[in-house]
Image (cartoon, rainbow, N blue to C red; front, side, top):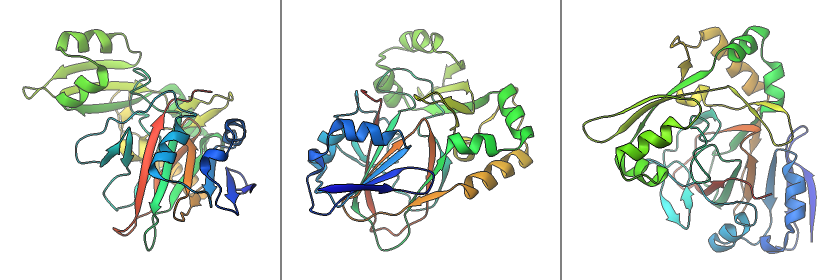
Length: 286
Protein backbone atom coordinates (compact mmCIF):
# COMPACT_ATOMS: atom_id res chain seq x y z
CA UNK A 1 0.00 0.00 0.00
CA UNK A 2 0.98 3.63 -0.09
CA UNK A 3 0.52 6.84 1.86
CA UNK A 4 0.46 10.56 1.06
CA UNK A 5 2.72 13.26 2.45
CA UNK A 6 3.45 16.88 1.59
CA UNK A 7 6.09 17.63 -1.00
CA UNK A 8 6.64 20.95 0.76
CA UNK A 9 4.73 23.05 3.27
CA UNK A 10 2.89 25.00 0.56
CA UNK A 11 3.17 23.10 -2.71
CA UNK A 12 2.72 19.58 -3.95
CA UNK A 13 2.17 16.06 -2.62
CA UNK A 14 4.21 12.88 -2.50
CA UNK A 15 2.66 9.43 -2.81
CA UNK A 16 4.95 6.82 -1.24
CA UNK A 17 4.73 3.04 -1.66
CA UNK A 18 6.29 0.90 1.07
CA UNK A 19 5.79 -2.34 -0.89
CA UNK A 20 6.98 -1.39 -4.37
CA UNK A 21 3.45 -1.46 -5.77
CA UNK A 22 3.07 -1.02 -9.50
CA UNK A 23 2.47 2.60 -10.42
CA UNK A 24 -0.40 1.31 -12.55
CA UNK A 25 -2.22 0.27 -9.35
CA UNK A 26 -2.85 3.91 -8.41
CA UNK A 27 -6.38 5.02 -9.26
CA UNK A 28 -6.96 7.81 -11.73
CA UNK A 29 -9.21 9.59 -9.23
CA UNK A 30 -6.48 9.68 -6.56
CA UNK A 31 -3.96 11.24 -8.95
CA UNK A 32 -6.45 13.85 -10.21
CA UNK A 33 -7.25 14.82 -6.61
CA UNK A 34 -3.55 15.21 -5.73
CA UNK A 35 -2.92 17.21 -8.92
CA UNK A 36 -4.84 20.09 -7.33
CA UNK A 37 -1.83 20.64 -5.02
CA UNK A 38 0.30 21.72 -8.02
CA UNK A 39 2.72 18.78 -8.25
CA UNK A 40 2.78 15.09 -7.33
CA UNK A 41 5.85 12.93 -6.77
CA UNK A 42 5.43 9.15 -6.85
CA UNK A 43 8.12 7.32 -4.84
CA UNK A 44 8.83 3.67 -4.13
CA UNK A 45 6.61 2.35 -6.93
CA UNK A 46 7.62 -0.19 -9.54
CA UNK A 47 8.05 1.80 -12.76
CA UNK A 48 9.43 0.86 -16.17
CA UNK A 49 9.61 2.98 -19.34
CA UNK A 50 6.54 1.09 -20.63
CA UNK A 51 4.48 1.52 -17.45
CA UNK A 52 5.54 5.18 -17.27
CA UNK A 53 4.15 5.72 -20.77
CA UNK A 54 0.94 3.82 -19.98
CA UNK A 55 0.44 5.67 -16.69
CA UNK A 56 0.80 9.12 -18.26
CA UNK A 57 -1.68 8.27 -21.00
CA UNK A 58 -4.36 7.70 -18.39
CA UNK A 59 -4.28 11.49 -17.87
CA UNK A 60 -3.01 12.94 -21.17
CA UNK A 61 -5.11 13.56 -24.30
CA UNK A 62 -1.93 13.23 -26.34
CA UNK A 63 1.80 13.84 -26.16
CA UNK A 64 3.65 16.98 -27.23
CA UNK A 65 7.15 15.97 -28.34
CA UNK A 66 8.45 18.52 -30.85
CA UNK A 67 11.91 19.82 -29.95
CA UNK A 68 14.82 21.08 -32.03
CA UNK A 69 17.20 18.32 -33.19
CA UNK A 70 19.92 17.57 -30.65
CA UNK A 71 18.22 19.26 -27.71
CA UNK A 72 16.75 16.03 -26.33
CA UNK A 73 17.03 12.35 -27.15
CA UNK A 74 13.83 10.65 -28.33
CA UNK A 75 13.24 7.38 -26.44
CA UNK A 76 10.06 6.42 -28.31
CA UNK A 77 6.26 6.82 -28.21
CA UNK A 78 6.49 10.50 -27.30
CA UNK A 79 8.99 10.00 -24.47
CA UNK A 80 12.15 12.10 -24.53
CA UNK A 81 15.09 12.69 -22.26
CA UNK A 82 15.35 16.06 -20.57
CA UNK A 83 17.87 18.53 -21.97
CA UNK A 84 21.20 16.77 -22.52
CA UNK A 85 23.10 19.85 -21.31
CA UNK A 86 23.92 19.27 -17.59
CA UNK A 87 24.01 23.00 -16.79
CA UNK A 88 21.52 24.71 -14.50
CA UNK A 89 18.25 25.74 -16.19
CA UNK A 90 16.42 28.92 -15.21
CA UNK A 91 12.77 28.97 -14.22
CA UNK A 92 10.31 28.73 -17.11
CA UNK A 93 6.91 27.44 -18.11
CA UNK A 94 7.32 24.65 -20.66
CA UNK A 95 6.38 25.93 -24.12
CA UNK A 96 4.78 29.08 -22.72
CA UNK A 97 6.53 31.01 -25.48
CA UNK A 98 4.16 29.31 -27.97
CA UNK A 99 0.47 29.81 -28.77
CA UNK A 100 -1.89 26.90 -28.35
CA UNK A 101 -1.92 25.43 -31.84
CA UNK A 102 -3.57 22.08 -31.04
CA UNK A 103 -3.16 19.15 -28.65
CA UNK A 104 0.22 18.41 -30.24
CA UNK A 105 1.77 21.86 -29.94
CA UNK A 106 1.46 24.58 -27.33
CA UNK A 107 1.89 25.03 -23.57
CA UNK A 108 1.04 21.60 -22.06
CA UNK A 109 -0.91 21.36 -18.84
CA UNK A 110 0.86 18.23 -17.61
CA UNK A 111 4.62 17.60 -17.37
CA UNK A 112 5.85 14.15 -16.38
CA UNK A 113 9.43 13.34 -15.28
CA UNK A 114 10.63 9.76 -14.71
CA UNK A 115 13.96 9.18 -12.96
CA UNK A 116 15.88 6.37 -14.66
CA UNK A 117 19.08 7.34 -12.83
CA UNK A 118 19.33 10.24 -10.33
CA UNK A 119 23.06 10.63 -10.93
CA UNK A 120 25.66 11.18 -8.26
CA UNK A 121 24.97 14.79 -7.31
CA UNK A 122 22.73 17.75 -8.11
CA UNK A 123 19.97 17.67 -10.69
CA UNK A 124 17.06 18.60 -8.44
CA UNK A 125 13.99 19.90 -10.25
CA UNK A 126 13.06 23.33 -8.91
CA UNK A 127 9.41 24.33 -8.64
CA UNK A 128 7.92 27.77 -8.04
CA UNK A 129 4.21 28.16 -7.38
CA UNK A 130 2.91 30.84 -9.75
CA UNK A 131 -0.17 31.39 -7.57
CA UNK A 132 2.13 32.58 -4.78
CA UNK A 133 4.80 34.35 -6.82
CA UNK A 134 2.41 36.67 -8.70
CA UNK A 135 1.02 38.51 -5.62
CA UNK A 136 4.51 38.48 -4.04
CA UNK A 137 6.02 40.53 -6.88
CA UNK A 138 6.30 44.30 -6.47
CA UNK A 139 3.42 46.52 -7.55
CA UNK A 140 5.64 48.00 -10.29
CA UNK A 141 6.41 44.56 -11.73
CA UNK A 142 2.78 43.45 -11.66
CA UNK A 143 1.56 46.69 -13.20
CA UNK A 144 4.08 46.55 -16.04
CA UNK A 145 3.38 42.89 -16.80
CA UNK A 146 -0.37 43.51 -16.68
CA UNK A 147 -0.27 46.48 -19.03
CA UNK A 148 2.19 44.95 -21.50
CA UNK A 149 2.48 41.50 -23.06
CA UNK A 150 5.68 39.53 -23.58
CA UNK A 151 7.02 39.26 -27.12
CA UNK A 152 8.90 36.08 -28.06
CA UNK A 153 10.94 35.75 -31.24
CA UNK A 154 11.08 32.20 -32.55
CA UNK A 155 13.05 30.38 -35.22
CA UNK A 156 11.54 27.02 -36.24
CA UNK A 157 13.37 24.72 -38.64
CA UNK A 158 11.47 23.52 -41.72
CA UNK A 159 11.23 19.90 -40.60
CA UNK A 160 9.85 21.01 -37.23
CA UNK A 161 7.15 23.42 -38.47
CA UNK A 162 5.98 20.94 -41.08
CA UNK A 163 5.52 18.21 -38.48
CA UNK A 164 4.26 20.37 -35.62
CA UNK A 165 1.78 22.42 -37.65
CA UNK A 166 0.72 19.54 -39.86
CA UNK A 167 1.46 21.80 -42.82
CA UNK A 168 3.09 20.87 -46.12
CA UNK A 169 3.21 24.27 -47.76
CA UNK A 170 3.97 27.82 -46.74
CA UNK A 171 0.43 28.79 -47.70
CA UNK A 172 -0.89 26.35 -45.10
CA UNK A 173 1.44 27.89 -42.51
CA UNK A 174 0.12 31.34 -43.44
CA UNK A 175 -3.43 30.15 -42.85
CA UNK A 176 -2.68 28.45 -39.52
CA UNK A 177 -0.60 31.26 -38.02
CA UNK A 178 -3.05 33.87 -39.28
CA UNK A 179 -5.78 32.29 -37.15
CA UNK A 180 -3.76 32.07 -33.91
CA UNK A 181 -4.30 34.84 -31.33
CA UNK A 182 -1.08 36.59 -30.36
CA UNK A 183 0.94 35.71 -33.47
CA UNK A 184 2.24 39.08 -34.67
CA UNK A 185 4.29 38.33 -37.77
CA UNK A 186 6.15 35.59 -39.59
CA UNK A 187 8.42 35.05 -42.56
CA UNK A 188 10.60 32.33 -44.04
CA UNK A 189 14.37 32.48 -44.39
CA UNK A 190 16.00 31.24 -47.62
CA UNK A 191 16.77 27.95 -45.83
CA UNK A 192 13.06 27.43 -45.03
CA UNK A 193 13.27 28.35 -41.35
CA UNK A 194 10.09 29.94 -40.02
CA UNK A 195 10.93 33.18 -38.20
CA UNK A 196 7.96 34.44 -36.23
CA UNK A 197 6.90 36.64 -33.33
CA UNK A 198 4.32 35.87 -30.66
CA UNK A 199 2.99 38.00 -27.80
CA UNK A 200 1.29 36.67 -24.68
CA UNK A 201 0.64 37.50 -21.04
CA UNK A 202 3.05 36.82 -18.18
CA UNK A 203 0.31 35.04 -16.23
CA UNK A 204 -1.86 32.01 -16.93
CA UNK A 205 -5.34 31.17 -15.70
CA UNK A 206 -5.19 27.73 -14.03
CA UNK A 207 -7.94 25.14 -14.37
CA UNK A 208 -8.92 25.96 -10.80
CA UNK A 209 -9.42 29.66 -11.58
CA UNK A 210 -6.32 31.26 -10.08
CA UNK A 211 -3.93 33.67 -11.85
CA UNK A 212 -0.46 32.14 -11.90
CA UNK A 213 2.86 33.75 -12.86
CA UNK A 214 4.03 31.23 -15.48
CA UNK A 215 6.13 32.31 -18.47
CA UNK A 216 9.61 32.08 -19.98
CA UNK A 217 10.95 35.51 -19.03
CA UNK A 218 14.05 34.10 -17.32
CA UNK A 219 14.78 31.43 -19.93
CA UNK A 220 13.70 32.68 -23.38
CA UNK A 221 14.45 36.38 -22.70
CA UNK A 222 11.46 38.05 -24.42
CA UNK A 223 10.98 41.78 -24.78
CA UNK A 224 7.81 43.68 -24.00
CA UNK A 225 5.33 43.92 -26.85
CA UNK A 226 6.42 47.50 -27.62
CA UNK A 227 9.92 46.07 -28.30
CA UNK A 228 11.46 47.61 -25.18
CA UNK A 229 13.62 45.48 -22.90
CA UNK A 230 12.16 44.26 -19.63
CA UNK A 231 13.72 46.61 -17.01
CA UNK A 232 16.56 45.18 -14.94
CA UNK A 233 14.81 45.92 -11.65
CA UNK A 234 11.81 43.88 -12.83
CA UNK A 235 14.07 40.93 -13.69
CA UNK A 236 15.77 41.26 -10.30
CA UNK A 237 12.37 41.29 -8.58
CA UNK A 238 11.34 38.10 -10.41
CA UNK A 239 14.66 36.41 -9.55
CA UNK A 240 14.35 37.32 -5.86
CA UNK A 241 10.77 36.08 -5.52
CA UNK A 242 11.29 32.83 -7.44
CA UNK A 243 14.37 32.04 -5.34
CA UNK A 244 12.45 32.80 -2.17
CA UNK A 245 9.63 30.44 -3.19
CA UNK A 246 11.82 27.67 -4.65
CA UNK A 247 10.78 24.11 -3.83
CA UNK A 248 13.64 21.73 -4.70
CA UNK A 249 12.59 18.19 -5.64
CA UNK A 250 15.32 15.56 -5.35
CA UNK A 251 15.07 12.20 -7.11
CA UNK A 252 15.49 8.57 -6.23
CA UNK A 253 15.60 5.88 -8.91
CA UNK A 254 12.10 5.21 -10.37
CA UNK A 255 10.60 8.41 -8.96
CA UNK A 256 7.95 10.01 -11.16
CA UNK A 257 7.08 13.69 -10.88
CA UNK A 258 3.89 15.26 -12.25
CA UNK A 259 3.88 19.08 -12.53
CA UNK A 260 1.00 21.45 -13.28
CA UNK A 261 2.61 23.51 -16.04
CA UNK A 262 -0.18 26.12 -15.88
CA UNK A 263 0.47 26.76 -12.19
CA UNK A 264 4.19 26.17 -11.63
CA UNK A 265 7.34 27.30 -13.33
CA UNK A 266 10.19 24.83 -13.12
CA UNK A 267 13.96 24.84 -13.45
CA UNK A 268 16.87 22.54 -12.67
CA UNK A 269 20.12 22.55 -10.75
CA UNK A 270 23.22 21.42 -12.60
CA UNK A 271 24.14 17.74 -12.40
CA UNK A 272 26.66 15.10 -13.39
CA UNK A 273 26.53 13.18 -16.67
CA UNK A 274 25.18 10.00 -15.03
CA UNK A 275 21.74 11.54 -14.40
CA UNK A 276 19.00 10.34 -16.77
CA UNK A 277 15.43 11.63 -16.64
CA UNK A 278 12.67 10.76 -19.13
CA UNK A 279 10.10 13.37 -20.00
CA UNK A 280 6.54 13.44 -21.35
CA UNK A 281 4.05 16.27 -21.61
CA UNK A 282 0.58 16.96 -22.95
CA UNK A 283 -2.91 18.29 -22.35
CA UNK A 284 -4.99 16.83 -19.54
CA UNK A 285 -7.84 14.44 -20.36
CA UNK A 286 -9.68 15.20 -17.10
